Length: 314
Image 1 (cartoon, rainbow, N blue to C red):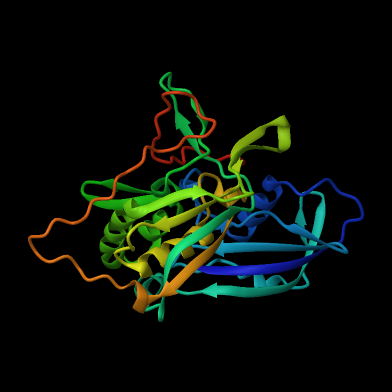
Image 2 (cartoon, rainbow, N blue to C red; image 1 turned 45 degrees about the vertical axis):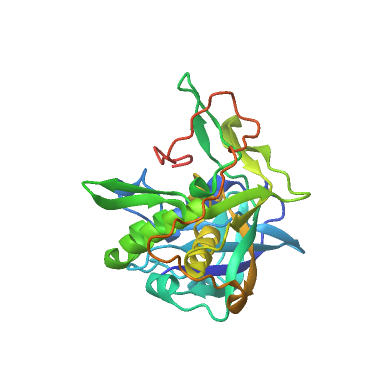
């Protein structure tokens, strides 16, 4: 089942270079090895950022295992007191707290009480890597994603779901198929009612992340608000999407720590938000769509489905 752990680690190294994403990715490849056939495929885990210094040689780190059927080969809780090499650092887990442990069946079907989620503020912890293709075929950074793209993509073949990426991709890949297919249809339809807007003081901007071999990863940082217009058909579905957004991350290379986000929800009492279903034969009210905003992208850029064609550090 999807699980999340929060680790507090002590650094035993006296001097060391800053912790790099590839160092963390290498450690998790040892903890959670995968078959060679899955080398270039989306991983079963999301690295929610990199170890963040707390002071006095302490670091805070959060990890998520996404597979619902196959448990993680190693529970990080088994490593308390056992030093782990991360690049030049020697990090000893002092505590490991399981902060999420809920199967997809419960996530996608459970009643969420007397309040309904109507909006959320999404803020990035690490750069979010997304690309789009311009009219010449060149890939360029994409930094103002639509809500549909923010939640990932579902891949189909022969009329069935075969995989995906991001939040909805986690459901497509790991949730029970009989539950995943109808839930995804409802979720993806509902995303058409979700609109984004800027967060004051959290402007979305292009960000560079430098790592080994003098390479630079381009992504975006900042924050945005997601709101449902006229009430979401299923507030519980929207709430589950937001939960998955934080668990799975956003964009490419989430197994390397990119695309980690914090999601803060805004709720309302259900009794004040219930709207009667339209009667048969009546035309539903149409919401006028505003043209999509673009920030910092080239003219005539065409958005495409997120791809995982190769890995960054493997």
